Structures are given as C-alpha cells and as structure tokens.
Length: 227
Image (cartoon, rainbow, N blue to C red; front, side, top):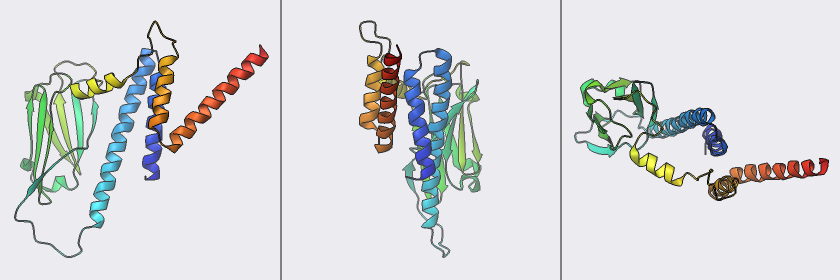
C-alpha cells in the first residue's frame, strides 16, 4: 500500500477507536466529522492512484476515437455536507473536456442517478437510492469541475446527516457495539471493540493495540504499588 494511503488508513483506524471510547456528544460529533473527512480523503487518494495507473497505460500513438461505447458503474465517491446541501464528489479524469450536457443527473426525493456520456469512449453511471433524508429535487444540481463531478442534493430540512443512505445507517449501527448496557460490565463493550479491531486489523494495528494494552497494564500495576 502507498505510504501516504497507509498513513491515512492508520489515522482513520485510530479515530474509529477513539470514537468507540468517547461518550460525550460534542466529542463524538467532532470525531464523526474527522472520520468522514479521512474516509473521503482515502477514497479520493485511491481514485487518483487508479487514474494515474490508467495514464501509464495510455499508448503514445494517436488512436482514433471509439465508434461504440460501453457503460461502467461508478463505485467510488466521497461526500460532505453544509447546512443546505449534501455534496457527493465523483472523480472522473478529463470530465471537464466533454460537453456539459453529457453530464446528466436525475433527482427524486430519496435518490439520484448520474449519467456521464462518452467520456474516453465509455458511459459512466451511478445510482444512489434510499438517501438518509428527503431532498428537494428542484433545488438540487450538479457541477462539473476539473476531473470531478459534484452532485449537490438540496436538504429539505437543515439538519446534519450522519450517513448518506438508510442502508449505510442500518449497516453501521447494526455493527456498532453498545457501551451503555446496564447489566454488563461498562468496560465489556469497549473490550469487544478492541478485540474486533485486533481480529480484523493488520500487523501494524495489532502491534499498536498490544503496545497500548501493555502500557495500560503497566500503569495499573504502578498505581496499585503506589497505593
């Protein structure tokens, strides 16, 4: 993995770990924002690497334009939000060079569908259904920037979205451990989180968790002796 990408992934893992430990709402909100920023940055970084890889394979000779086109689905994107809009960023190299009318978005109250026609001999599509909250189709829009399509979904209500879609919310909240179970040890939920991180993590994550665990035990032992 690219060192810069690995560094971002490590930062994301640590934010997630802190988020699971945090109990105060303000702290959790700050960590949620940071998590989303890191996830978006990682997605964009991977897309840039893919685009660069495709550049390397370009032939040096001039190739006539393709007569036919085929359609590919867009699977990678990043998103952010303001008070009035949810913003979806899609990286498509050279999209600014095709006619603006070739970039079309259809909005409904709970979905949008993007179609980019004839970009490098291909059509590109992306459909997002079951948005977390209703949007106003008539106020939503799209913008074409350098190597990027920006889709701006107009919020019907000016409130924060914790997720982009209902499916994402259900999936993540289903996997989210409960840390406030009254009948269990308060530390049990956190231990389950750490165990899952350890089981699913790479060697670097496991070393980090082992080190944190060892230092914690040493501090506890030192505290017992001082007492």
